[in-house]
Amino acid sequence: MSGDRPPIIALTAGDPSGIGPEIAVKARAALGAELPFVWIGDPRHLPAGTAVTEVTHPAAARDVAPGHLPVLPLAFAAPASPGLPDPANAAGTIAAIETAVRLARSGEVAGLCTLPITKKALKDGAAFAFPGHTEFLAHLAGGVPVVMMLVAPGLRAVPVTIHEPLARVPQLLTEARLEMVLRVTHAGLRRDFDLTAPRIAVAGLNPHAGEGGLMGNEEATIITPVLDRLRAEGMALAGPLPADTMFHPAARARYDAAVCMYHDQALIPVKTLDFAGGVNVTLGLPFIRTSPDHGTAYDIAGQGIADPASLIAALRLAADMARARAENWAGARG
Image (cartoon, rainbow, N blue to C red; front, side, top):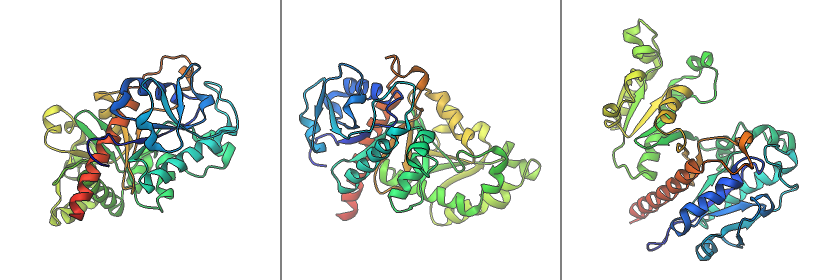
């Protein structure tokens, strides 16, 4: 990344039967030259009348005329019908992700933003063996440990366990897992959010953070030992804290990220603060990845009413993270 030129972000097509093509076009109209992302997909899947400029390499996106969507064309097997996912397009959806990762790892784009996919269509059409984007991206990166962070204005939240039944959380909450999440989160905040000494608040698992063992002992037996070890290394960690008092404005001002023990503990405050504009970030990858924090929305696909706010926020955050990573990498080398 050189001078004041905005970084180029690769935007994957996602499931072409969802709202992805529509919000990609809306994001281009909103961002213009501010952020010249390149969409990777089949131009046939874009809304009728979309002004498209096909490019052969991402850097050409900077020279595309205003009002035109820069497209790195990738042929899919079939047309797309809004609201009706087609397994025939599974291979193309996967190829778009693989292409974006290759471009990011080669330095041709500064990061990638992924539009929503549907796991069932990918499994049915291409034997996709991963629970979702995050696990697939970790696989493409060589199996590195990764962490999901949700970002809204004034809050970054990380769940230690993600899409798991609540009854399984106590068994999945181990010292090793919690330590990995804290280390990856701490490193990601330093590298990609330009926070020299990140402050991390850690929630308890139980009501009132266990209240001295009266409401559970995971805080004493699992969470506190990990926090004590990492504090001894110099990490600024608060907790374990009662989750019900962690997310009001005064509390949020005291930390840079909140690490939560399970899915809803992290996502409810994020979606309460900004339901339409939350962003999903994957920390721990050797490249930057963000995504809008919503799904394919088949029920409204093709109607022209999908809100691009989360995608716009995800693209802007990817660009901001790319700038921070470039500066930190240059500083580390210098």
